[in-house]
Image 1 (cartoon, rainbow, N blue to C red):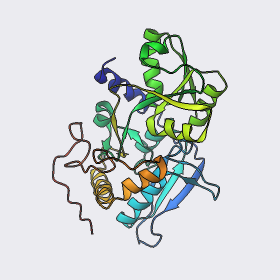
Image 2: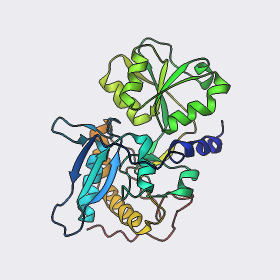
Image 3: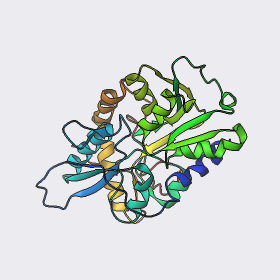
Length: 293
């Protein structure tokens, strides 16, 4: 399947859902409490470790929480982070429940035509995780006839649906990523498809789970989505993210949560020109006005 066709199919992973607010699982508040402005609101999938997952002290922790705590400081705004199922986050934001999403969201041309995005702060690629001892996957063809587990309402579910007939795949979709991993460990699915950072993190914490085949041609920006009428906020968020790239904060958080220092060509380090992911709908080539003190 071509990159363009794959990108088109991702639209259904976040936009073709009922505009209902998801049921919040937990709530975390970050940023300065006495800024004189009302709190901003965003949301994450609170089961998507190491990006966001439950904290023993309450609320959620992870890369996304740390990153947007730093963004809130740059904006001098308090930020309330809800934790809920990913499948409802974009519809809830479009319905006005959230100002933006703190969840890592794959940027595709179709999504970019319907939402505004900041530039990417991470690259994402689609990767499979398998049970230790099973034969590794070396190509898409070796997935033929297999059952694949995914987190519901994601690009990973869209990929399996798009290739179900071609490869005779069986889909198991779950509300949480940990449940999708458990399906592999229990033998209900041969492989779990998710983002590369999540697969590697799960493998580092679960000895019987192995990070395996990365799908070629699936590298996209992971960025912050907003409604199309919220350009001023998009630009403020982007300027804050750029400053956090320049001072090394995003790279430091990446190393903390993902276990490796990002290379100079990674999105944690690269400051992209203009506002938004270059070359996609919603991109504004106006030079950034980020004032990084």
